[in-house]
Image (tube, rainbow, N blue to C red):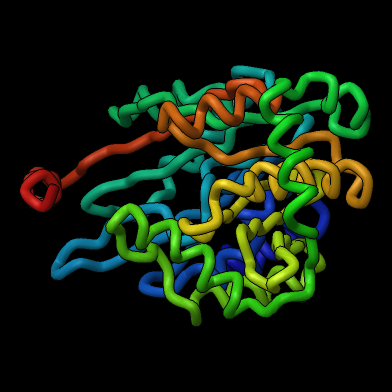
Length: 312
């Protein structure tokens, strides 16, 4: 059986494979490249996996992060985590099977705290941060940790907008891309890409859209929540620059948290990482805990590395 077929079977029984690493999610995000996976076994049973996304640029094949995928990296079954000799053995087996590429770049899951086998193979690492709320089922405790300024913004926003879920994907995309236009940046994904992802998430029952709409039927802000068996992720958000003063974006963040707690019954909410000072301050004011994750990379081609540096 081919590795991807075996991985599909593995994901059907593994208890907590993150949504970003599910085969159907990677299928939906693989435009412009292909995804593949390497597997490690114990006694003939798959117990660890490392999915990766490959692209081609001229003669160079390289591993990078696909659109909409915040984290990948090695996944180990729970019974093999935290036991360093076994973790090292399994990770070394995964690394040994990676294809020859010009470069490798991945954001590991925040749950991965051991990248030592990659260090031993001359990979390098930078620590980034995401922000997470834990014990989410106790929503009263979460609410008590929200800063007074955030609570005020939520209260004021409720006076100006209502939260709905039934607007079109096209409307979501329009408002979401306004945030990039305001910063003079191109949208990082196209509407067809977003439609493809949304169709896959909707089929899996793993997403909800949020719209903040006023009495004039204007959409102030949008948010896009996805989830797996353990965690809800604040994947996408955006505001109409002319309507940002309403605070609707803060309200939608809170509504997404409440949805993850009360509707989904999950215990962890991930705002997704940002190293920007302004974003960090807001996440912390929601009571979220700074959580590190590893960006792991390696250049195997000096020429490709040089070309990447010249492109910056």
